[in-house]
Image (cartoon, rainbow, N blue to C red; front, side, top):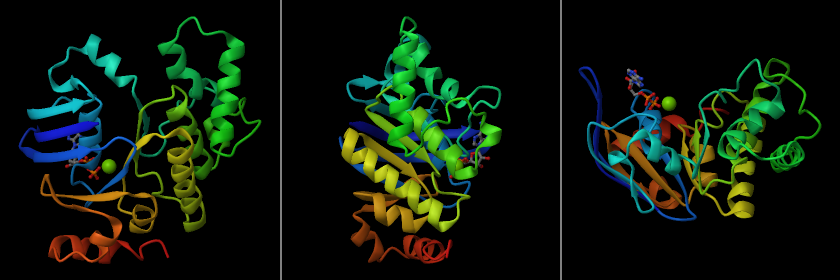
Length: 246
Ligand SMILES: Nc1ncnc2c1ncn2[C@@H]1O[C@H](COP(=O)(O)OP(=O)(O)O)[C@@H](O)[C@H]1O
Ligand SMILES: [Mg+2]
């Protein structure tokens, strides 16, 4: 379980997170929605310790990561797979090298045959085959996202963070990624944290949806509860984003 408690994060005078509270339960898929520039990516990066908070606490299982030094933080980071916004593959590395990068860091003595087996397994899980040797530049946008997802599951993490997994994809490709998130959650029993402003995807994948507004979680509930919200801020947001991709 992940517990986010009263987290503050500023960049100079830009006070982004203003006392964010959020509990993420084991096995659930929780989606964080909110306006662009509102701090969703910053929150994800704080969760894995890529960004340091200015105040408040974040617990990942039994670890208080906000108090850990970099060398022990790394131990906790092993429990995370991260699908970055825009996939963020290394352009000079092949698909196989991109997928196995974190795995080799984690297990330096892993054999080449185990690496290639695992790469194949990861690709199969995201519906791809025989593209190990390709470079990111040779892939379409949707394939890049899927390779990013294959990389995220390579180390068999407890948690996967998805930052805007469907943004920039046409509705059909977006739906394919959404189905993959559901499939991975079912097959691998991973706890998923999704950040998106795509409400179609949010309703489909989430057990719970949380809205980040003005640096705080202002509403949290099941997809049905969010659809029927009386919170004016949330209602305006979802009405503006439900039909966006159609
Ligand atoms: N590394 C950084 N340095 C300075 N400002 C940043 C950094 N990362 C994010 N920000 C700022 O924090 C705010 C929230 O950004 P972000 O979390 O990316 O929003 P979004 O909700 O769209 O993911 C924005 O104003 C952004 O410019
Ligand atoms: Mg973002």
